[in-house]
Amino acid sequence: MSASRLLILTGLLSCLCACVMPTYLSQITLSTESRPVADFRSRHVLFVGTGPVGSQVFLGNLTGGLITRLKRQGKQAEFFYAGAVSEGAPFRIDSSANPDVDTYVLFRATGETTLNMTKEKIVAGAPGITLIGYGNQFVQDYNVSVYSRRHGPSPVWEGKLHIDIDLANDARYRGIASRLSKELAKSRIVL
Image 1 (tube, rainbow, N blue to C red):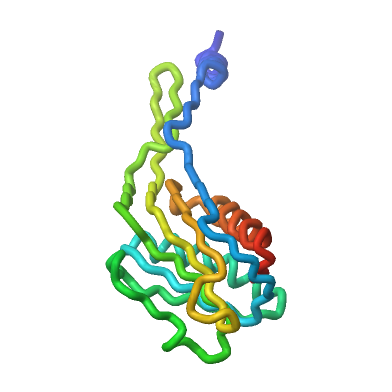
Image 2 (cartoon, rainbow, N blue to C red; image 1 turned 135 degrees about the vertical axis):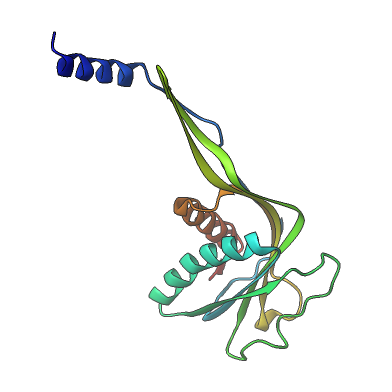
C-alpha cells in the first residue's frame, strides 16, 4: 500500500474514532415574580441595564435584537447602560428619560458575576489528537422590571433572569428575547 493511501486510510479511521464531548452547557431561567395584568402595548421603549462590564456586553447584545425587532414593527426603542449600581441604591429612570418613552425595561444585575474568557466549551479527541474549544462564559442574575408611564412608578411586571451563557453565542440572545416576550404576553404586555 502506498504512503498516500495509508495516510488517507489513517485519517479516515481517526475521524471514525473521534470523540466530541461538550463540557459546558448554557443555562437560562426566567421566572415571573409579579404579574399584575397591565394590558398595554408600547410605542417607545427604553431598555436600561446595570451591572459590571460583562452585563454591558450581554445586555447590549440582548437589547440590540429586541430593538431591531421593535423598529421593524414601527416602534421606537433604545438602550442605556447605567454601569454598576449597588443593589440597595434607589434607581429612578422615569425622571431623566425622553418624555416620548412610554415603557421602561430595567435589567438590574444582582449577586455575584462570573466572566470566564477561557471556559472549556468542547473537547474533541482522536488517537493522538486532542482539541479544546473555548468560550466566553458569563454568569449573572438580573431583576427585570417593566414600567409604564401610564401606570405610574410601580412596575407592571417583575421577573428574575438567571443566565450562564457563552457571550459569543447569538442564538442564546434570540432565545432569551423570545422567553421574555412570552412571559410579558402572559400579562398582556406587548413591547
